[in-house]
Image (cartoon, rainbow, N blue to C red; front, side, top):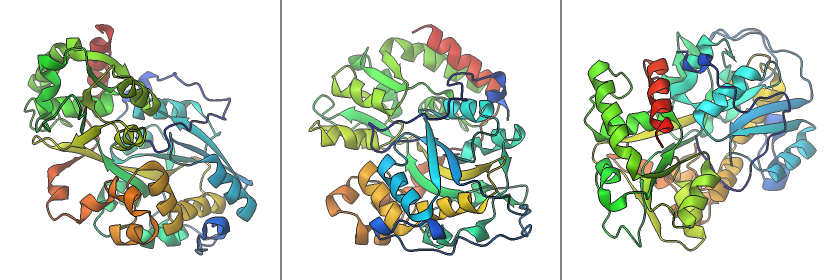
Length: 390
């Protein structure tokens, strides 16, 4: 849900319809390691019959892995090196939001093998028949996942494992520190008339509405009743005059803040702040008292993706050296521990990420995990009504 090197966006699958977000959206390597980066070769697993987790026997390799992921989750030069080492071509298509990604997965048919998205979206992909269970024995680098990262419960549904984590992060409050000189402690600052016309948040009902709920005292924004919906509806209506616009991707957010059009808002990924800081701009982020949504993005297999070459690619992306490069290039947290990251990531780059935060004894207690929300039809309808008034 997330971004890294903000400027990279590739869409190579001509069969995908970018905006056909149908009503279905509301349903609930070893051998491929990169020598150029010093990646070690894991065993990646071997072809095997169904595992205890219910996965099927591996299908025949094709020589190509087609990946649907978020902007900045990989870079063309990494994939070129991967192909040179493994002989497997990786074709990447990107999405800028959770909703857009689901739309692309729905309309891709058999054109995709692997998709990377958050824990909370898994049930609707399963309901839509898009995923196949994941065989963790095929990925030796599962051992590199940070011990503190709470990934496995959310990836295990009906006794089956559906993927492995690739990246995690939070969705905090962000602001221009030259304008907002005292760090805000509440989401309600977004409704402060001081910032009328200078606020933005991502155009994504899935991640936007929980924050609104937390801000205005909804007990569980992922499981809302009629009264909760009324609270959120009023809050959205009151927020409308505060907004400059809704952002449609990470580049959009960076450009908007960089131009001075917005000074405060809901941050889809802290690497947006890092990118602005790299440009010499004074931006900051923080975690409001009401709680901050956090996400874990994962590698999951689409129908037809149960192949050794796909597992090998996942294994390569979980190698410590790949993860270190990803963290350094993007400002994301990846999935390795702080100690592992500290050994391979430049100190100044690592300091700008959230990797260090997980070492704090109270950090995870302050986070609110993104989980499957209820009444997706109603949420989408309310969000569209909100957008129509902008």
